[in-house]
Length: 597
Image (cartoon, rainbow, N blue to C red; front, side, top):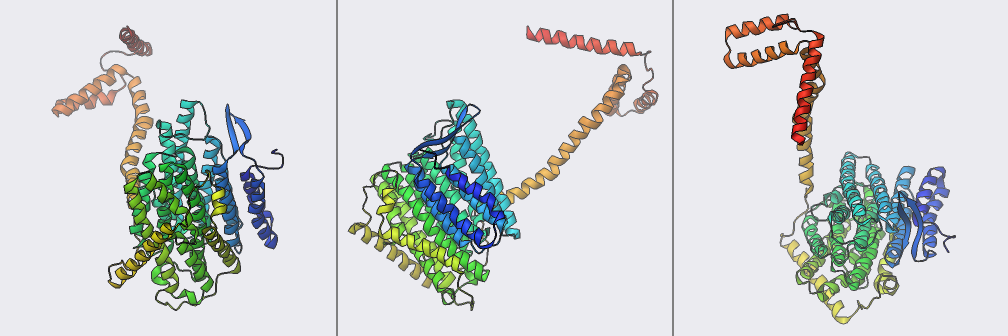
């Protein structure tokens, strides 16, 4: 049954290694063929556990295929094709290789049936993503990439420690439902949470994502965080703590996004906001909420990629991405502006767009579960995402004060990629049936009920009205040329303080200890061994002198030092020195024996 298929990750990893050997149009065809071949391979893999390899008495499972993993597998192949098409004009083999390996590692995690395999691809994904940040080759991208790598290595260490403890406790590395039932599961939970950008652990995202290349951003905004959503849905569904983590995630980014000048940072905060809906759905843990989480992840990948690609096209053509530098671009880039508006309508959950048919399932699950406060927070967050991602991003990029920028429309490959994503956003919004049919559980939810459509439209229109009124009244924050620090202030400033502490007091202390241990102590022992009784007398006289400071003590000490190691009291031979050492050894053995009894 499995003879005609291979692990989904294999196609991407092997394909990435072949990229440098291909040139020109052949390379472009090969890049687009990889996700197509991978998708065909995927739809022919039956459900079950496949490609099991024994390793250190554990089974490594490269293909755990079920309805949950298949949904993520489908959308990862689709978005990989779109992202590679968007980057097709790029003449950078290393960047293409990193992007394909990144996508392959994400697939490796999705279909991993054990924690060891998951960890290996978890780390591969972090390294590949880091290169996509550094590939921009700016001072900011180098710093952001280093911080990204350090944070994710720390998260990987938490995950590894948790896996070791979990395997020791349970005797198994199988990856399935775990729940919070011990130190191992808690460490795994935290490791997943770092990649999911939980509150307080999130600044790596808003720091690093805006510094990626224009094309690499599509991969960055897709794989790391959505893979974290997948592993949480696999390992921790129904964990009530996630309800509150998710609810907070939906709210706090709004306040940062509305004051942010960099439009890619705005999209970074909106990413955290949208992840909050998914995390909350995992925490609720019902079939409806998990369907809502998975469908929202599927839809979010499409509309977020569309928004990121539109901003990437703007950055590619103008070299600018701040609100204060852009405006009036609809005249030069009308198609990009149109696609951006489709993404904005989708993320705001307007009817007939895909965000509407997915986000509402999480709302419904929260209401049916009686989670009143989280439901209100989700409601508030829905209005907030309209303010910053639904209105601010397209307005300031394309329709605000005309800065006089006249440029070409985005390259053809970029327009095609955005067009495919925009089409899927509308198609799924109008015909949600195909999406609902592949979700993990049977769907008994009707998004286009009269009450739901009317309520959503009222919410959106009042949110838009509030934005207009607040802006006209001068209350809505104006755009400023500034870098707004978030919780990353602590590790930015803390890192400098730690570096000073390590380079000054700690280094000085270590140097002194090393000198004492490796220089002074051997010298002292050699000096002491030449005449131990005389050395002891000199040491005692030194203590006496330090206490009394008398001249006669100083003269005696100086005389003793001058004639050392010659006899001070009586002749001292080598045999006597050996006897002296043996006496001390005998006393030590007697004391040790006495203590043991």
